[in-house]
Image 1 (cartoon, one colour):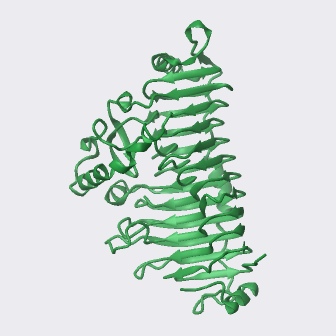
Image 2 (cartoon, helix red, strand yellow; image 1 turned 120 degrees about the horizontal axis):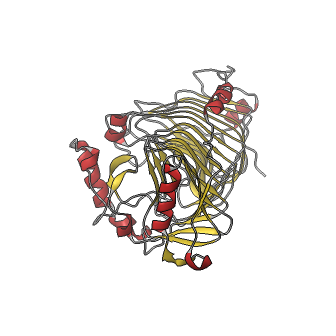
Image 3 (cartoon, rainbow, N blue to C red; image 1 turned 30 degrees about the vertical axis):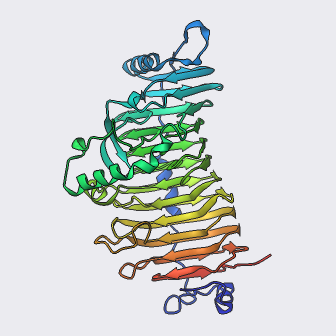
Length: 454
């Protein structure tokens, strides 16, 4: 265990010398990966849609949240897609959908200011089961509330609100009862049951994601507000070219992660606001044997200019990351809440395998977090030894400043898989009440890193 409260360690940090005794004393950090960002951004281009609107008009001139508009919305989506694309527009009012809204190619579901798309909270409305994922594992389950499968040029945009109407009686109250279903699903994976034969849904307690694009290309979610989600809010899976921009997420249910790109490439998350019941942003790539079977990493992901309030973590890699995660860039974000537990978090265990590599973070302002500013934990959830040790390497933080935390860092690797190459430059961890915890870290370099107290 290593402590940044040690006077010698503080002196070495102030002089810009690594606190790792055996390696890299006085050595420069490796070249930054930020030069790769312009090329990644060139590959992230939001879809464009024909200048053609398909308005959903309520009878009587207004939507009151009581009449079911699912059929009308679906009809407009079908017409829009068949005619070559455009916008399906919901005007001001409360638009109830008793069941999922399924987006098709070349369709932009657009909510004007004052529009609220309400979803019923009756699980049977989200049957029949569809091909989806639950916590990184493929299965047949309740449909996500907004769902697109194998489509191109799809979007949800506007200044309106999407409301899942989840609460402790509807969806959220399932959490204490779902352990049996999670175990059953895991056993199916171990036995090699094909994903299409892993049928859940009716009679089970695995909640659906809110907005899920599955095996889609050219995806945009922009401007909307998301509240009262059953599960993860924005969940692109096996997608390429994804933009999530200007979204406001306010939902505090269990597992209410804000945005979880999974097995995706070329993703931009910018100018968003997260106030969540779980991780604000969590990048994933599949769980255990199922993640290794699919074997598609999440990579080339940029997060910038976002605000994180409540949540388990600001930007998180894992824990479902068996397919690997690489090339993640985080900059110009603000994270601040007594109920935000960590700013940057990497979590895995020896059941997962996979890799977490090339995470670059710069110019992040942290007001306060209740745990560590940087937490890397390879004993997350399953501390016992497994057969698939994860690899973590090349984590670089620059100009990260925190005002208050429990610890600056919590870095815990495994004896047979030490954390590799963690480099911090020009960082300040103010008013940390406890020292950092450093265990099984192969290389930790601290250059001009301080821990002042006020």
